[in-house]
Image (cartoon, rainbow, N blue to C red):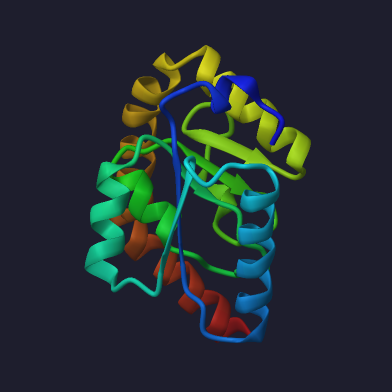
Length: 163
């Protein structure tokens, strides 16, 4: 990231992830290489293989939740972050990206350029973090409302019966 706003700010990134296979190790090596190559060691903390309660604590502490994983059909970590009112930055290929109301409760990005543009927007408009709090809480309430969930389950059951 060639971003002076980030380099000169007090902001830091904490990358929290699971490393349990060769692909994870490859991605971790790439991230570490990027951080070292760009002299960003003071800006990045990498936390690996944390238990669920530790991850939830980290979500509560963060200002913005970024989920850049791909090929994840149904990640719930962004929904957990939304339930804490955190603005989300998520890749469009993530199966639960459709929960984000783009540019209201977070941002759906497809490229490194879009990601950097989004970070710049957040640095320029820190009030977005506060505005997205209410938006995301309302979205989660709508998603998890018992009547809404029951209705969706009944619709699924009807679909299954018709097949």
